Image (tube, rainbow, N blue to C red):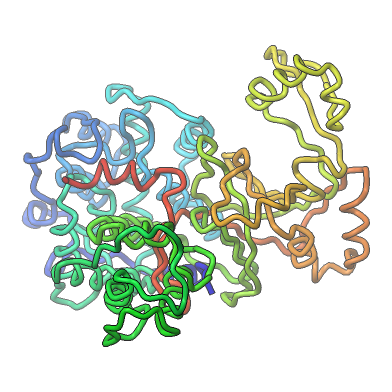
Length: 546
């Protein structure tokens, strides 16, 4: 089974109290202040920093004083920025860092479901929601609002950590490294992560099983790298099938033995049943059709250097630090690079479903939300950018375009110079016959689609940002399974109606949208996927020295 249920089962950040470094006492008095504050790292500069933005320490001191931030938190904030030489953690010049979005998602999730109002900051919430709703924005390091948002996010991280990480398992200095601050050699970074020992024998992976499983795979690939890497497989002119004999076969068997996809010891050049099983295994782990046949695409994936895979593992380990804890009840997980949706009930898998996600240029972000409504026979209120870029050019070519596509022009309701166009319920509707709403800053939702052929493809990034379901009817039936007012016949009738109907869910479902290009599934197998939105590529440029 190729899905991410294991990841969510393991991503539990238990409530508790954040401990300081082993041997450290609480920040407070002058005698302990220095040894509880990281030394300023003056080796960090714009040439090797994670973010390209810096601020001066005096402005931070003014913020702490003007906002009456207690020493217990203020010293932690100073320590946090000493470690990164007063480099921004949450912004770069071209917008948010990946960690900013991930932490805000985690923090907002906590505020929503914990009932804890002590960490709520309405001004920060308003600011973050506004910035997250923008497709892109640039940042000036001297902007007072940006600096205030930066420091409030850090203050929120420290306050959140004090309440949500089990005692002792995240040290002060480790928390400071949750947001990278300096470009590093990936092999050295992996070595440091794998060999670092704590005197109290408490580690973050002990409270995050998915992180621990992926760290184990990092150890495996680190060892492979130290042993000389994996064999390079020569390109084939045509697919290689069972029964064939070729020089590549010996190398492929060596490769699959090292990755654990087939037993070691088979040195023959014959494509036998054992090799076919090994190829099937690695195809599944790469998200390819399990044909048992060697193809050019599979060889290309196998020939990704081990060092690149180590970088991929490090990036995804960082992402796993920000996963919210799994709730009881219904949980819907969409992993974008996997093109899959998974439904869990009280931690147990119910079913999986293929999805189509936003194409390049319409990247769906990582976030969580609460699914609270189903809309049968929905209208599609076409976004203004699609009206401008796609609909209007079609109307210019064909005056009857709207009528032919069951669309109607409602005029310029907003006075922005762009007419509001919507598509009527029916077979041509781009949202299909039902959509599922979970309010969020990105205006993303799950929906049906008339374009069923897209689901047969291995790589499914085609839509304008929202997430299309292979079997939306099955999803509707599952979400309404305990509602006596909605049986299968009534759901079918509502889906095929010409009138839109909104249904509020009595039993709401939580939705996690994730972006993992590497993870360990519930069967203990390491999965790799393509970086469909280029998020890995962007982080690599910020994080690693090559």
